[in-house]
Structure formats: C-alpha cells, structure tokens
Length: 183
Image (cartoon, rainbow, N blue to C red):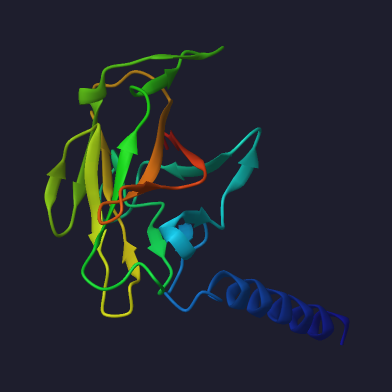
C-alpha cells in the first residue's frame, strides 16, 4: 500500500512538472529560451537561470541521439504569439567570440569550432544569423543545430548573444549565455 501511495505521488509530481513546462502552448521542452515581444516590440526573455545584471544562462550537452556525439539542438527558441506579427524574423546577434573552459577560467577560442545550422536557412554565420520566421500568429518555435568540431579539446564552451527582431531592429532585454558541455 505504501508503494502504491508513493507511485501515485510521483505520478502527480511528474504530471505537474510536465504541465508547467508546456504552459506556453508551443510544445516547449525544458530549457528552451522562451520569450515574448511586448509593446514596442521589446523582447522579454521569460526562462533561463538569472545571472547578475540582465543575463540569463541556458545549458545544453553535445551528444544528442539524432545529431551524434558533437551536436545538439538544445535549447530551442520560442517567441510567444503576439505583436511581432506574421512572417517576421527572429535572429541572434553574438556579443563575443566563442569561449572554452580551460579548467580554471573561460578563455578565447576559435569561432570556427562551433557551427550553427538552421533547419530552414542552412549554416548560419557565427556573428549574426536567423533562428526562424514567425507564423500567422506572430510566434516562433525553432531549434538551431549546434555542432562542435570533433577535434576541439575543451570540455565546455560558451557563447553570448542577444535575440534580435529583424523587422524592428529590437534586441532582447536579456543578454543570453549558452553553455555547452561535452558528454
């Protein structure tokens, strides 16, 4: 009886966590960058681990089942339906070069070690690239594919960027940091 009670409790908790992750109605996955274009088209980032100032941290591991040992399509990027409008582009704008962890600090690395690829637009430039185009309701849900060079020696990498709305040239209010780990 005690085991049955615990099983029921865990089921309820699992359902609550799953429901909370998907409350944005876009099929969000845990860890996705969920944002909203507010009045004046300012992008407000709703998820991520808050860091000092206006920075948010998102983490992912290379080694996705479908992309192999050196790829991942996490995190995804979601822009909620709203005033952004249909058929506009959500992009990223890098703020620094790729960094790698040397065991004690983040150091400069070679940008060519990391490739960003869009399902719809192919390989994207490192410094500024497209994430996706908004649908009829003004929303976006896309996953870029990130690939690290198999010859890279570090075990962790970091990129820093803003989300950018091409239509209005508006940037997100948060500086986003993606930290990737090797599996």
